[in-house]
Amino acid sequence: MFASTTEGPVLLVGSAHVVDLREPLHRVLSDRVLDAVAVELDPERAEALLAPEGTHRRRGGSAPLFARLWSVLQRRLGSEIGAGVPGAEMKVAVEVARERNVPVFLIDDPIRQTLARLVRSLSFQERVTLLASAVVGLFVPARTVRKEMDRYAESPQEYTDELRRVSPTTARVLLDDRNEHMADRIAKLRQQGFGRVAAVVGDAHLEGLRSALARRGLPSEVVRFSELRAIRASSPGSS
Image (tube, rainbow, N blue to C red; front, side, top):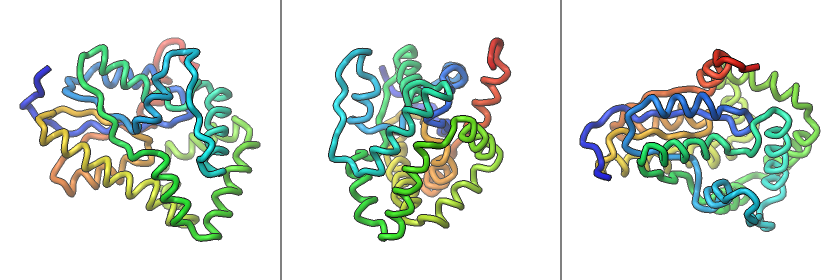
């Protein structure tokens, strides 16, 4: 397939890893003319997520404790809320790209390197806060999470601001640094001739990634998590 010479705004689609957004995401991506799909994955996570059902998936035991706790929490909430496997929205994006015969690009940093950098950078107080949050999260009822997701959909910036207040290092490593790196990779795709790119990323990345792209001279169009939820709610048979 030849890359397009027609350029448009980068389409940024916000997802939430523990909410089932597969149908609205499929609709949004299928309705667009695309030359490439980029996803917030690195090769290790992509291999695990896209492995056939029943295939043994490697699980690294060397990840920091809070990261392993967070992984358990995501799987539990995904099951209880109805999203299934965390990251299912990334799998849908890959499936749409394959259906459309357009290439898929992995634009996130390697997860192990990111977590190692985070642990090295955290102050003692931030480490304790992050670990405590992960432990408490294991016992949070699903209904509470649903309420918080509703609050986030109404005011996502409030949650980002709270993260920066509680742990500015976490915000820098997990959001700001990754946004810059993902923007670099998207800009490189444009330089290679992929004019119409859709990037599916966690909703918390949207504003920072849009700003990072703007600094590189790339306009963007944003479809937020709240908009995908609204599409799902308006679909026949939705609950």
